[in-house]
Amino acid sequence: MNPQSSDQERARMARTYFGKTPWPDDLNPLLRARPSLLEAYLKLSSVPWQTGQLSPRLRELIYVAVDAVPQQFYPEGIRLHTAAAYRAGAGESDIVSALSIAALVVFEGPIRASQNLGTIHSTQQEIGDDIRNRFVTTRGVWDNRLDALLIHYPALVSAWVEVLETTFGSACSLSAMECELVYVACLAAAQAPSDAFILPMAQARNRGASTEMLQEAIGLAAPLGLHVMVKALPETGPPQ
Image 1 (tube, rainbow, N blue to C red):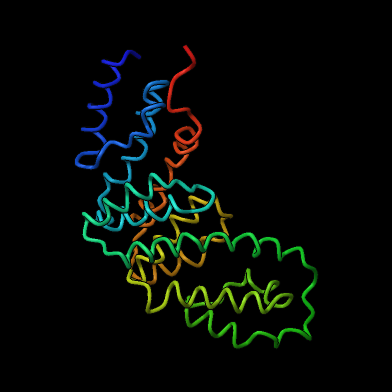
Image 2 (image 1 turned 90 degrees about the vertical axis):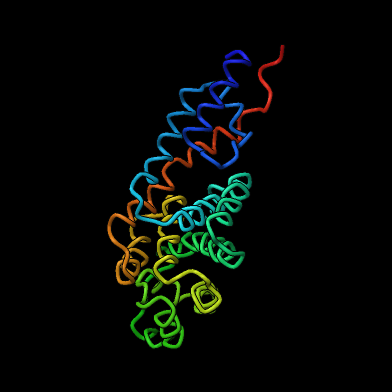
């Protein structure tokens, strides 16, 4: 694509898909190399915005969070959507809350790995009652996936519950429903196993989220494959 055509395409896509949000310059290499592919991803990213179930503020906070998920870490996206979240009425504490929820997905690794630690003996069932109670107070219901880890490594689960207490507790500036929707989107971004979604989806519904709201939150994580190309493509074209 020649420079003039590239400038025209960028201006058109900026108007169509970004509105008042500044054009992300890190999209330029993909615009130059494969404009049709870039536009296909931009169309994909625009689909959740057409339903209007979530507020612009919450959408931007979800974008901040999914861009911060370790498996998807995209600093440019975090900066762009943080600025957009502020414009939509979010405060600094909202940004910190969204980021803290994004960090939770890393613990899916220990949870999954603990299933291979061995048989849980009935004589050990009394261990961890306090930990269970703290977890239920924070998350509303016990997550049975933690049983094996609680038996074999209670100190780790206790420390994990403290992280949850801080993340979902009084320090979190988001509403309980917003927290769950952000968490669901982050799990989708992290490609978490299906059983990881059971608790946050149920809690989101219990706190007033509709199926359409959950669909929109999940949909916001759908175009993150774009980050792979954006981060991998060189800023300049092939050597002359």
